[in-house]
Length: 362
Image 1: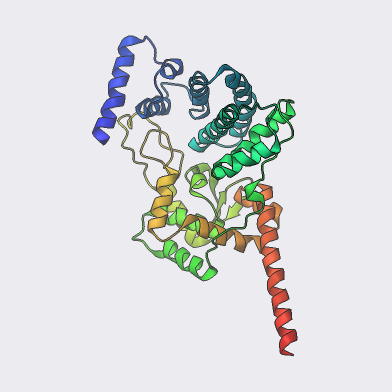
Image 2 (image 1 turned 120 degrees about the horizontal axis):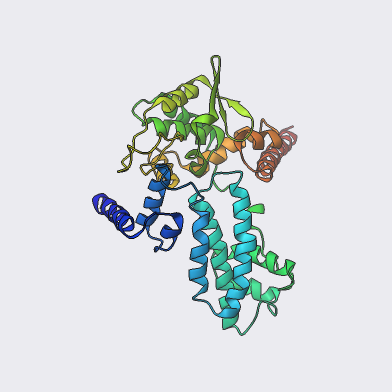
């Protein structure tokens, strides 16, 4: 399969070289959005034959036009400005401060698709966006999975432009507590394994430690660069957001070894590609390790990311103010506040239960 995959993009490269005086992003944009086309673009950017661009967001407009070509005209007229001036505009703004990832493209497409699906459903009910009521929205939500709740963004946009009434969709994440939290004893046991077991691959030891100690997620871990790791004297620091964070010596040693490890690549253009600036490079040219693959490997080690992350954030939130937590870990301040409140609430409940038990026993 790997040989077949390599043959596809090498064959495409040869064909484009014969048919075009210069291979540009515009030339590649005209091709079907196939994986080998995406791989060729990455290879040409990594070897500096093509200039860098946001390969994830810049692929959305062509996908959008192909999608809208299949829709009735009245749906396309609503979706095009929403997608272009709301979804993509905000996504591009975020990408100026954070490296773009496949999840950014997934985020944009998901919101566009859910809006199309809702408008199509309204058509089937002989309704329009302007005549839809809260009862209609509730019926739509009840008839699907939690992905339907992504409609919230489209309805806010539509109301702000007087295209719809003030229709609401509950925000799921604001009320839900974490369903699984790894106990401190189990978390420390897994952390000791990451720090001391030389039989575990070095990348997994570092990644596992970041999940267990700092509540980082694989999607962010695979984007960590060598420049985020600094040393001052005998101390090693990792900068996840703005403030450098002092690493404990065992983890600092693992990071230094990982940073010094040679970068390997299975790309056919590996001789042209510069050394990766990423601590977790992928097998392709210029890209990072797939975060889904990293999650799977951590699971195989017994480190289930969600419970482990929840346990780490609970521990950190019990010691740090929300602002410090957000600054050190690179999480949103709203998320940090939520964790601090959760820990404070559970601690208050624990003290109340102890007081109640003491009064009963006295």
